[in-house]
Length: 264
Image (tube, rainbow, N blue to C red; front, side, top):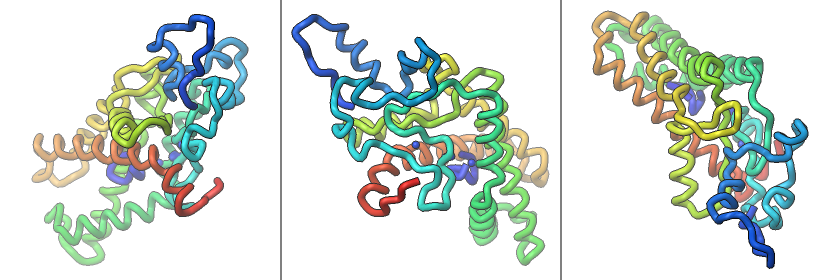
């Protein structure tokens, strides 16, 4: 998510195989099948879209994944979580329509206007762009610039580049392993994603999309703000916010199960 992601608009998120007497595949191949970014073998064979149960995919009780790793469509009934995929849920590739819908949902959801309002107020309080001045008129300038940044980054990262590069913009929850493993996995998704074929690839949609959005933003900010250093800072900020959003999505099922018990 960009300046509002985290906001940025989807949200829109097994255990080890049991060892049998017969020899099995190498450990690396067995472990690879448990990764959330691995495509569903069952789906590839018969084209079914129905998620396979964790026990069927991993040969172990699903209860060994804490809380089942179930994501909700919104976090605390407000924050969009539309792009988060539950643990071991296998989905077909995103269509162009899917990517467009998630990008627009994150950009035009009612919560987006609330978060942008908060961000604009903080920016005005810190006089982030002195040329906007203070007062109601100044706040209006902060608001529409912040919202333009928000929508711009969402569309590049979630729709335009994923469509052009055939990449999946969803976040696939790991849900297993220790805290450090899940922390590293969630942050790494800013640089690693899956393509429409289900294979891991460099997340060009995030890296280049955030950069494109930062570059475009310089076109509608005051000339004093159109410097390389400010554009570069905005680029890194966009990526950092999206990485932080992934981190929160990874642990949201645990937090929800422990404190809020939200169902959908």
